[in-house]
Image (cartoon, rainbow, N blue to C red; front, side):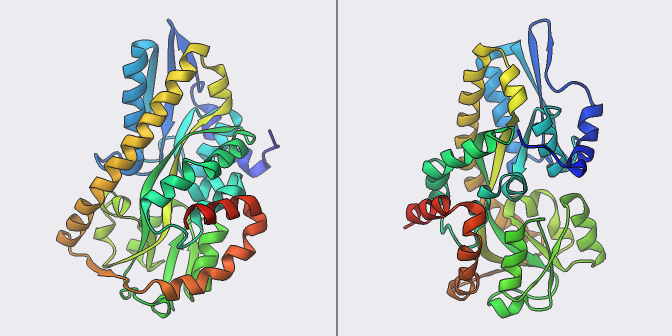
Amino acid sequence: MPKLTRRALGAAAFAIASAPALLHGQGRTVLRIGWTSGDGAQDPYASGARLFKQGLERRVGERVDVQLFPNRALGDERPMLDGMRLGTVDMGVITNAVIAQVEPAFQVNDMPFLFSSEEQGHRVLDGQVGAALRQRLEARGVVPLGYMEGGFRHMINNVRPIVRPEDLRGIKFRVLQSPIYIEMFRSLGGNAVPMAWGETFTAVQQGAVDGLEIPLGIIDQNKYFEVTKYLSLTGHIYSMIGLLMAKRTFDRLPADLRGPVQEAAAEATRAQRTANAAANTGFLESLRRQGMQINEVPDKAAFRRGVLPMYESFRGQIGADIVRDALAAVQ
């Protein structure tokens, strides 16, 4: 496994100080799984974690205790991911852009306007591209057990509705700390402000940034309707969220538990995708009731033209073969 930077080692200090990641007591294995958003019934991260817990415990009974840690209880996403690489954090449900900080090939999932439907995203992730990504991340010390989804990401802000690329000008959008997100807004004339998730709500509330871009479920379940006015259905990026396990944790599992873990993860991934898709209609209705002004984006061609050069400029970082296979799969 590649060496971690001094910063990454420091970021994982919380996890190291915590109880051991994998505990065996009286024949029971304890797995701790964390995520940074809330624990609402329809939060896509929480849903994925709960479905995995239910599926695994149904298969193996009391041999496994899956413990859930929402709301950054195990840290922000990057420290959790670094903890998984070190083997001090068992599991997490992690946003794709953060996974891409560790394995740049995952940037392919965040290429703007690559997917026009959830089904296209599933086809790419469940096929050759997803298998190649899995192999690369395992080499970094993390096992992707499932490619779940947050749904398409949309733009929310307090300045104006976004209908055309020029509407982005002068608006400060919080973005994930990802080169693709930063470059997307730059290409479209917007102002990207990279920021950790834990700081974002307060930053929007206080006006340090004007808005952000996130899936409908996160807007609703984390009450962003309280601090933003406009929701524009840009659908610019399909949000994959990974159900991940530390390779060291996976390798230390009793041999007869590894199969059930993988089966429960696959089942949970299918169920989470279905539940999230069904919830999105309800999220839109809920956000309208909460007073958000919602607009469609009828012509995305201008946005696509604006980001087209990114496909060439990121080809080397992602891997030419992965970009080629992803584009072929969405034709």
